[in-house]
Image (cartoon, rainbow, N blue to C red; front, side, top):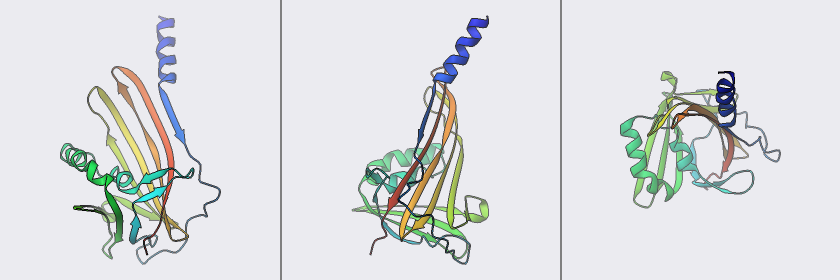
Length: 191
């Protein structure tokens, strides 16, 4: 019995995955200017194609699509629009005076928008950083999982910086699994 329990413990320890990127040393800290509603002044139009700290391309539309609340109808809509998100050329971010933060992805023949309400706790602003937090059921076919992720958006030298971090834990095909990641990307403000 003891060997059986040790085998399960070892399996649990071996079924984890971690991907960490530290804040790039060459990037300045967040701009500390805040708007009237306490958020960083990130309203504007940004290039959809940005770069991670190693210079690899990152698609902002796809990155921000992970913030859409998971439900069966929305999940189907994201899957239908995934190819459209790959063709997006610009992302418009706006924060209204009534506390609604909106993301609008625009491409040739493609427009997709989604919003978050600060009053409902769907985002918060602190120290010049707008934070989107999402947690909940991450289950799928042969997977039972709980996900928790956070996306921080802020300005550095007029560029939008996105720090995505979080993870999930659960069971995949009856095997315990856990995952954590921390990634960074930077996107230019369009002239």
